[in-house]
Image (cartoon, rainbow, N blue to C red; front, side):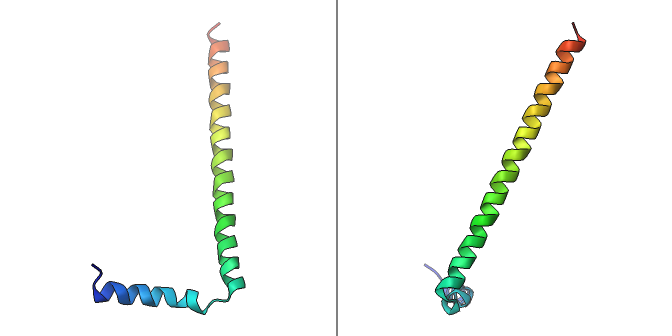
Length: 66
């Protein structure tokens, strides 16, 4: 069961959202979506970079040992 201190903190933390208009809440949601998409894209690009670099290194090692 939640004690009074936790309930107080949750209440104080939720007050800014209660005061937001619907459009402000949508803007906050859109901001988090943009951050998520940017993170996904950066992760994908980084993964492709390392995949391609590893393929090149393996190819170069095979060529050098022929």
